[in-house]
Amino acid sequence: MKHTRGSARLALCTACVAAALALAGCAPQAPSEEGRSDRPSPVDVEFTWAADADCATCHAEEAASMATAGYPAAVHQADGETCASCHADNAAIASAHEGALPSSTMPKRLTKTKVDDTLCLTCHDQEELAEKTAGSTVLADSQGLVENPHALPETENHTAIACSDCHKMHSPGTAAETAKAKCLSCHHEDVFECNTCHEEM
Image (spheres, rainbow, N blue to C red):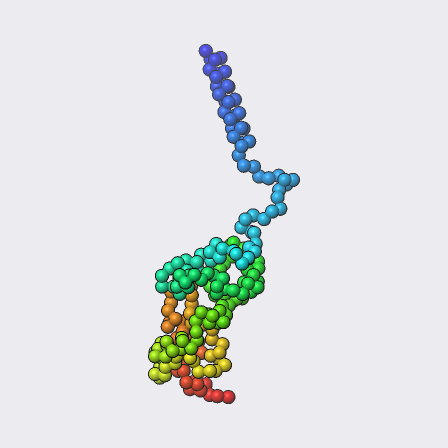
């Protein structure tokens, strides 16, 4: 009887060891030095931009703004515009994506590319815009001086202002808020008249 129990235990132990070895053989194994691949892991693969790339893959926030009411980008998408309608400088965009990885931090502002005013003005007429905003008081300074946002006095600094400085397509902020903020980046005393803060040299 004792002999039978010992044999049964031995058989059971042998079966357990055999099962454990079989399972270990199926488990993922670390590659040997000989069979190790030099291919980068998916996280390290550099992104190569192409004109037909799906921008939403990385720029999810901007893509969401194109489908969210209240965002200017959504208005443009409803009119049939796409990312490429405004972001049309392919060479600059390709350059901006050089060295980009899936793990790269998305920039909050365009630094290497810009949306050129000529693109905006293919759909929007400057004179019509100026007429529409002739009575606007969005740009009023602390002295009560009001400027038409689409017909600013012609100065060197004003010619450098781009449509996209005031009209943020992927932001819920209104142009009224961003336009005044743009003015205050130079007219920081909230006075539009020149030479009231700094003496002319």
